[in-house]
Image (cartoon, rainbow, N blue to C red; front, side, top):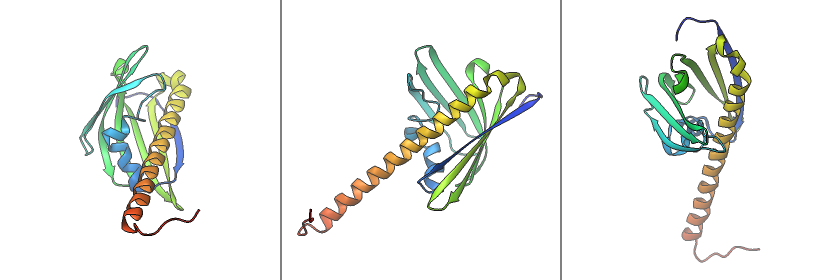
Length: 170
């Protein structure tokens, strides 16, 4: 990160999923392409993720205003508790931010806290950046809920196959 005065923003979200599910969803390109940097009016056309320290990620969201290119390098990874990565957007590639994601169990669910360190010169973008992360974390919640729905459907189907003679009472 270049030498500059830093500002920090924090966003937290609670999920009805295990820490491993939350961590793994963030790093799975097929899942991440549906929430990571995806906008309502865009379409992610590329999501490459190398989930290892030193590995890169690249997510391109095709938007009406043009392609938004997001990329970075994983700096620290401790499954399922911590992920730290550099982060940059193509049109501001001289400005590399640092993102820290902390994941902790919380009752039957998980709490994710995201900390974004960015140069103070971008302070006018702080609220927009915060809202962007809220959108990402809400999208992650939708994906995790969808995964749980698929798991429940599979469970019900497997029980029906395992016990074909039993009928359900209505």
